[in-house]
Length: 332
Image 1 (cartoon, rainbow, N blue to C red):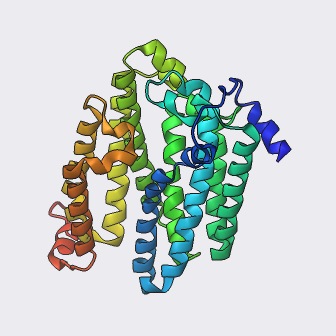
Image 2: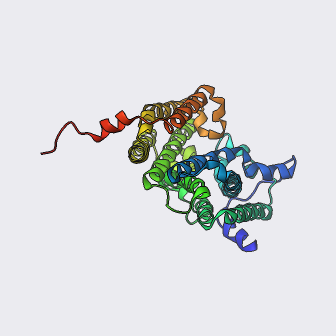
Image 3: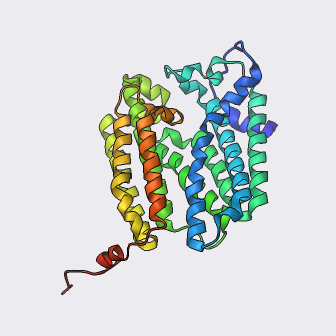
């Protein structure tokens, strides 16, 4: 644990503030961000798709899925712990995040590193109980937390790489969900890329909304170093690029594996556009995805998209397959 403390201490040059009041244990729970655990729902499509493609009953894997979700939540919390601790010197420039326990004080470095190590070890131990492939994917989730937060890597400080390295957790979660069901074959690469680029779109819009919220460019650069190189225009253009890539790879996957799901693409496009609109609102909810449940209209629409896609999994439309497989223009 002392070795772990020395590694991360070099990544946090700004000293902790004096201890603040309140229950200290609650502050350690807060930096683990259990309210962010809902993000691990992105494992579920991997489990569902694997069960459908391999043609096995999903009920057989309910226990493994519950164990896998808990494993992913614990590892994600380990990443959040070290994220908050190492970001304290930057979060003090954010009007909202400066109130976080890591900035306000009252946390002991040894306790933070112990919490990180215990959460990571517990998550990996549960992952090992599922399968070696699940364990490897869970380990990758932990490694990305280090690459994203810890110097000298700290990819979150590098323009564009900050979005791409954070959003890569999406395809990792897809892998986790997939390996609940099967170790082989591996998930389709088109689905993994669609998941990655879809996550990059969400992160790009989040960066855009944060950048607009901070208003002052100098303050934005002190809070997040990559903001020194971004502008509103580049953030919007990059988000548009990620959305196009996600749509392309998703289309490739659907045409190859379940062509009926192509009918859901207009709804998915509306969902992407709606989320971008939310990102443009003052004090946008896109800055805090864990609070998106307050956008009841948007959440209702997302639920509708999920229901439509679920229905299309069980509806065969032979005429659609015939139409797309027959060309009306013969090649010379």
